[in-house]
Length: 395
Image 1 (spheres, helix red, strand yellow):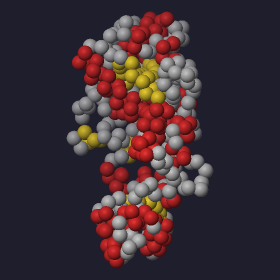
Image 2 (spheres, one colour; image 1 turned 90 degrees about the horizontal axis):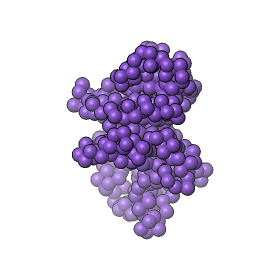
Image 3 (cartoon, helix red, strand yellow; image 1 turned 120 degrees about the vertical axis):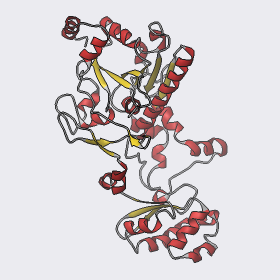
Image 4 (cartoon, helix red, strand yellow; image 1 turned 135 degrees about the horizontal axis):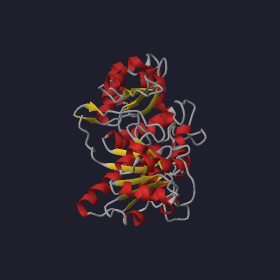
């Protein structure tokens, strides 16, 4: 497959989740992503358990770093900076997800690198951004979910504040980093000049509050939690209990409400004055929930999905194992073989992007420093120089 980003070279000082997730998206689309890793230990994700693959590697690390290269480099040394600058001359962009006060200290911002290559694009992802009172604060996904209001919007009304089950702010921020990187490269190719781009986890999280934020800003309306993970203003759009589990039904539009009650064998509900209009249904949500629960409890989740699929928006409520073993997902190719030297049968999730109907290829993430000699050789360093740099802990 010819990949759309083939020919792009992106350098990234990245750790753990948000930064690596963003460059993973670029690498799987064909960009050459070179991870700049500290010689001792590398990306902290390499030591994140509980499942390890030999030395300096783990299934957690693999998840975020398919199809990349690894160069060990100490950026806090003059020789490390000299290698960085030689690399920058060959690259389109430099990304990082260091703490906000670090890029300038490490020579990773545009004022430092523009002297080396004016068209270089510098993209920074940090917890709270750069150039502000919190730039030196460490921060993680769950903290952003808390401060941006996610926990107050998630879960049952009487439950304690509840976070997403996944690190969605990291993933959102990574996607925004990837978008900013591509936007910067397009501009730099048109103008010959790069610049700094910033994305902060907290701001990315707040941006995802979307229409509830606009409702509050313009109408003072505060969106709360509804029972059964329900939509804040449309019903029935929520969980219903079945004979053996749960099903999520989303009759978001009047036509889906009509199709739903027809499929349930209760067409008379369309004329029931409690449920005639969307406003009526919302005002009588509790009564409607009790009524529909009584119907859904008469059959299994699978039976309801079979009956309603393609008629009214519906989905089974799966645990993670069932989601990954889902025959539809497997048929779509979302589980991909990615053989690893220490785990020949390793499986991973494929990119959700298809090109000409095909899933993007992936190769296993690199061992720490696996590409150091090759990359330095491409830059013109000889074997003796590379050995000296290794002996000095520079690479």
